[in-house]
Image 1 (cartoon, rainbow, N blue to C red):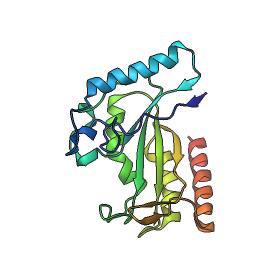
Image 2 (tube, one colour):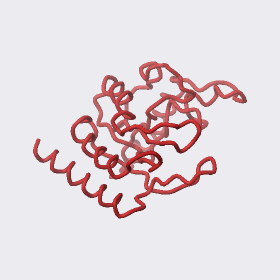
Image 3 (cartoon, rainbow, N blue to C red):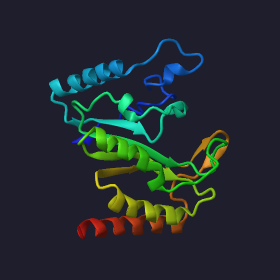
Image 4 (cartoon, helix red, strand yellow):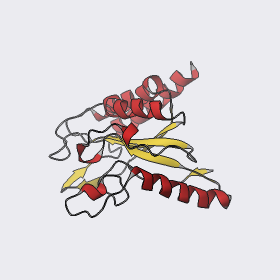
Length: 200
């Protein structure tokens, strides 16, 4: 069975289905937790009643849109019918005017991970992660990310990487593994994760 595409970024403001989307200045009306819960249950029930061999995850960003300070508990629609909860966490590292800093995978994920582990017993997946190389030792970041998944985030059972270079706000973001050093760091980090998990 394959995971279904995630309903992306529930507390986001950048997609029409995000809880905070209608708070944009040109928005009309508002999405609510109740509407989100209803929509999730509707979609899940359609697939379940037809016996579709899919898994469902709900994808959360590692921070709320508009820097909304509310805790995830206030925006949580429940986990009925879900198979996992996923979190998206990037290190955007000096890639845009709003991201003039670098951070480790652990620093980016920890706040939302802690909230989610208090709200559900479901497995946690990393929906998307990557780092640019701007102001960042990318090979070291990758190695440490694998180590942190193994040691600091025991509920994480799946990680999806965004390995595709793309232009954002006029700047090429080098998300992919673009050098032999980055490729080797990814391989080494993965092997380290396997060894840590195998050792218990």
